[in-house]
Length: 201
Image (cartoon, rainbow, N blue to C red):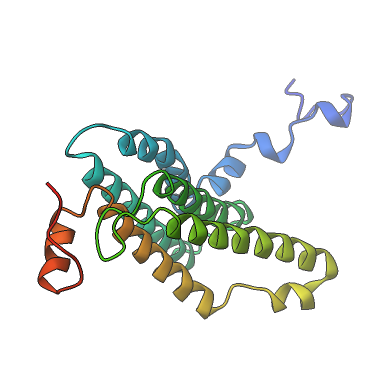
């Protein structure tokens, strides 16, 4: 007989909900798969960053833009298709922080390559430290609030301002990644606007 239905077997031997196919289907929803895709894209982003090719910067930019779009898309699908899950709610901010932290670390490995601050070596590390410190502090604060109860948890819940912050952060990082090799087309457009000199060759 199957151990999940045999009445004499110890309870610990019986099939738990986690081994049921429907349980896995509830975890691996389409929004969660998109979120896992963002996590899986991080090693690819690092490889493309150190790839010595004219396509390195466009590839990094494309990967980061795709990650930013799926960040919006997985939340939209979870709401509209009613596919929200506790695992997805946990994984989504973790994937965002991993991607943003990785990009910040990569940007810290080289000076700013385009614009009026070209050659600056300290601004990006200072901003990276501030952003990373803020994320760690807010994560710790939310964990503490969760232990205090629903009132404290709601006081530190993500608001509309937090979503705008994330959108601005993603847009800024996209521009920095796109300009990492000196700007290319981005530097040319900035030069036309009078914001930067001509792109480096």
